[in-house]
Amino acid sequence: MPNIVVLGAGVSGLTCALLLSKQKGNAVTVVAKHMPGDYDIEYTSPWAGANVLPMALDHDSRWERRTWPELRRLAAEVPEAGLHVQTARVLRRQADVAADLVKAALGDGGLFDLSPWYREVMGRFRDIPPSELPPGMHSGCEFTSVCINTAIYLPWLVGQCAKHGVRFRRAVLKHVSEAAGMSHTGQKADIVVNASGLLACKLGGVMDSRVYPARGQIVLVRNEADGIMPTTSGCDDGFDELVYVMQRALGGGTVLGGTYQRGNWDPNPDPNIAMRIMKRAVETHPELTGGKGVEGLDIIRHGVGLRPAREGGVRIEKEMIDGTWVVHNYGHAGWGYQGSYGCAERVVELVDEIVGKTKRASKL
Ligand SMILES: Cc1cc2nc3c(=O)[nH]c(=O)nc-3n(C[C@H](O)[C@H](O)[C@H](O)COP(=O)(O)OP(=O)(O)OC[C@H]3O[C@@H](n4cnc5c(N)ncnc54)[C@H](O)[C@@H]3O)c2cc1C
Ligand SMILES: *[C@@H]1O[C@H](CO)[C@@H](O)[C@H](O)[C@H]1NC(C)=O
Figure 1 (cartoon, rainbow, N blue to C red):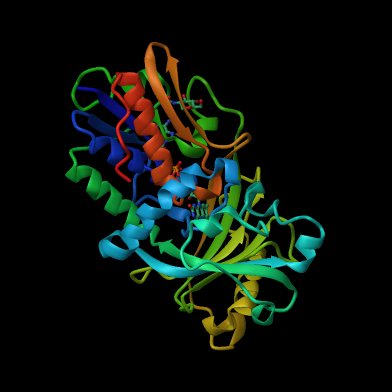
Figure 2: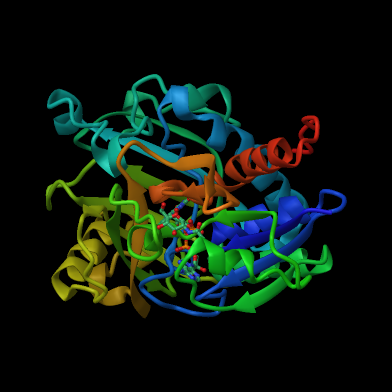
């Protein structure tokens, strides 16, 4: 009976714990400094929008491809999970296409590709005809996506884990050996899953210096959007600022974004950035305030989250550290939700390899 300790209770750790607990015979303990309900700059998941805007390049798209069917299913069949279906609208600005800048937006991915891989994956995909494009846009596309109310979804994941026998403990760990001693069974863990997010660069024996923050600032408002989640390849306010709007399910408010500021650790909302975010949002989405402009916005709060980015991309691999098998799963940058099941599925495979089982057919 493999004893598994999952370090981390963000979307990565919780999704791993859930899939591992569904496999017969696993005893799973989640150990975390922060848990759903906490809002802390070291804990990224609660700050996310979140929605599905496929970001990987094609060769790296497995995580997002494998996750999408499950998120779509949750939105359609499991209302209490806090997801709902919305239409994503991806717009490429003329200026960004001309300057060959569309790749740089949101972390060097494929979201703004002229012919993206995800056109075969996302439902109701269509290229937006020129007559429907807003001024200044080169081209764009639309497809069916979902928006996740993270304040509902993370506690829902905890509940699903509990239902499958996962135990939860609060602790701040300094080293893998400590993690291995935290299984609720009282025995040494056979495997530690390392889903420590941004802290993978700060804590522990083998610090990963390739992990860095990509700061995201948002404004959460009570105003309602119209079911469309637009995002553009850039904006006039600077290369690390973004434009996106998404209304969350179950009264979660509407998220106005945002920024993608590499290497910036500032946990405080910058009021000037907030003003620019709101101005851009009402320009692209006049219906938010019925044409009343920024003054018509009703602010719930300002937020800052640090996306756990990593040079060279996400790290999902097994490693023996001081006599304990560790399966790493960190560095998800801006796509931790939309890649969560694909990554967790890979973690289950690696755990299976370690315990010597034959590979099982995926349940997803
Ligand atoms: C503004 C913003 C918007 C975003 N929008 C989207 C989006 O639309 N779609 C999307 O898919 N993603 C989005 N993201 C990205 C997404 O939020 C992240 O990729 C994801 O939350 C990373 O989750 P994680 O579980 O890896 O890390 P975290 O959520 O940070 O969790 C890390 C966990 O590890 C624990 N931990 C770490 N070290 C230790 C230790 N030594 N001891 C004990 N516990 C420890 C922490 O306490 C925590 O529980 C967005 C992010 C931001 C900031
Ligand atoms: C997780 O990985 C990071 C980076 O390699 C390392 O600093 C940390 O010690 C690891 N934690 C565990 C429990 O394996």
